[in-house]
Length: 461
Image (cartoon, rainbow, N blue to C red; front, side, top):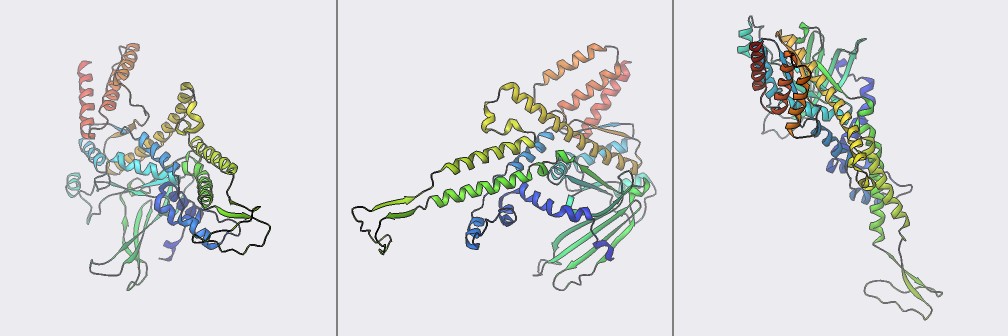
């Protein structure tokens, strides 16, 4: 199928950008190996000098630490999955999915932490939902549970793995093509590695899996491995969900050019300082110079001759160092982390720092809303396919200071005092406090606690 090779124009336009942003985020040896793409060669610079500069290249990775800080702070407390309904089978499934959402032991919190990190680096990440393949369709729900065919699982899809797609007028996918590449060999005894490329095609009803093997002994032809009707055809949707951040909150896109400028300025300053350590000797004399210079030789100077060294005065070095500090502060400013920039901002007043961190918290809450919305859409789609009689909501990801829990209790008491006769308010406040204090327990226990609170409130009526 030749059409499976096609790439969306937006994918072709963004592919090089995604590679650059991944290098800037990871840094380390990955950036050193690709330093030629980012370290600018000076005009008329010789190949040998540029090669030595590439060999000495270093990278101060501010944006990588910033992205990691945002993701770690956002998911400091787990999101709370709130279920409404008496469907015990559905509740048990959600509890299992929360502890192992990808059949690899990854919790749903850790899974979406990775997807949010991918989105902050590349602007978007995707969640693919699938169900185990079944030789035949189960006749009953009990048979479905026994065979495990109703056990949905999630797969993370990077921005550069979705190579082709089409959307309708509402922005929902009509069909998608996901491309996965890996190295494989038939057995450990084989000495030749083959490059395997798989294409996963999904539309609103059908799916297909294609494969191509490239290498010694491989045909290189595209073959169809599997096809059929996918479970999401029940609700007429493509089983791929996007976790997308707005352009203005795409961190690598905001700070990437500043990091590249900082890379070039810092390496230029380092190179100049290094070369300044090897000062050139100078002899001031009016006679012709024909003496041999070396460690084992001496110089014979006339009474009026002088000897010295050529060294930079250092004014431009100070300018460069100041510019590097300004670039560093600008990287933190455009990513809404002025309070962590250091430098000239250390002497800020406490009120000013609180104001800056308030802005950071609003950005974190926006990221939290994006993550919660994606989790809700994924879970609601799965429950609709499984036909579970449950309503699902997601809360949390909106508090980023670990404070004294007694303050939360005091606020709750004041809130309940405003409407002492509202049993519903009391019920919801109790649940929120319980989930906040016990945010790291299993989903099964959270459901049990919620049920016990509901039963206690019903009995009190």
